Length: 345
Ligand code: AHM
Ligand code: MG
Image (tube, rainbow, N blue to C red; front, top):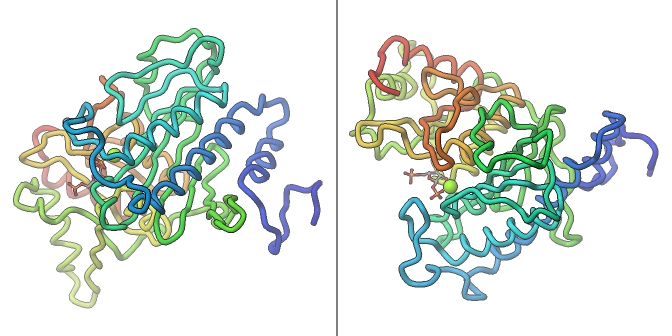
């Protein structure tokens, strides 16, 4: 097994830290801080994966302390709280992080001065937690910003997603897969439980330019705006009678739905509608990281009328409509929004 080349032979088992270091060597003079931060994130994912797998057996399902809610007025589950603590600890210990924003914390907060670094991390420690109790896939989502100095204001994370330097997610599903995107591209690593290491399993992921699957909560169709209703209809009843309709898949865990979309192509949407003007998903730690991953893999992400990564959040828990996936599919979504404009998005 060659230790000196970054061109791994097909048969080689490449662990995540080794792969990240190899990628870093492509940029001589880099500090290695981002690499260390990404390695810390994968440690957090391993701990969460372990907790998720045996949650029921060790009394980790169910609600946290009675009446505990997060800032979104959602009941916090024990696993939500544990996953949040795991990531906060892993990120603090890395010594590379400055500001953290978590779905589970009302405010953004800073690491203590002695352990502060030049990166800020926004994350949803356990997304899709309504699926915990029934053993359906859930995940972690994260995005990383860089600061020139450690002396930054806590609200300096309110920046466009296009300024992220890395983002990704970990899906705790039938296997545990960690997907990381940087300016170098997108790679996926599968956890080998027998050795406790993430192994490079999906190098240089590219999303197909068009897919055959749409993914949306169709139960909300009563509230949909016209472009959404018309677009989904067009997928189900193609104008060309020779064309097959798209298939529908919706897990209800963004991480799982986006991961499938990334690998198979197609489109995932959580639009705004007549009952929620901004949609459901949070800009900083749900929409931005996923849009970043999908764009780096050659796909697109839009609100319907604007590129998601160009949004500037006004508060850390801001929400946005989102459509993401294969470039041609998402371009078609935008065409429907142009043809059937909605007054306010
Ligand atoms: P959560 O952060 O409270 O888990 O909510 C986010 C989840 C996403 O994973 C998923 O895409 C969406 O909510 C599903 O919402 P719905 O049940 O309205 O379809
Ligand atoms: Mg979430």
